[in-house]
Length: 168
Image (cartoon, rainbow, N blue to C red; front, top):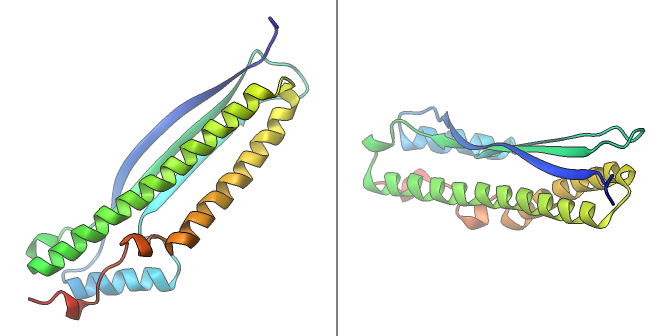
């Protein structure tokens, strides 16, 4: 099939950045994250972007899917001046948060792979837009399911113990 349309994934940035956590003491940082928890805000932000270039009215030679993600980790500049237990609690939480975010990134990449396999099986490029919409819905459900199972990472250690547990 010489006139076959090629489906290509173009990866953009897959990066890790940081955001500053306010607070001079462990107690202040604990309150900051408890406030985020009550507001149902993520402690680690994982931002995904995806788009597809296609016009279902004319057969292109190539349809490409652009993918990218950014993981934004918390960074606390005052951690070095804390007690040994507070430092350990902070570092344990950050390590768990990074692993949790990386699992989200892996889910994203797995769903991209599934989409590529689906397009390989579907010769009619006009049906690819439906596969892409299905991909977006499946992706959202996969992340929601993972966050539900992990309690937004809390079951994996994305939590800080109360201040009275890290004194001394």
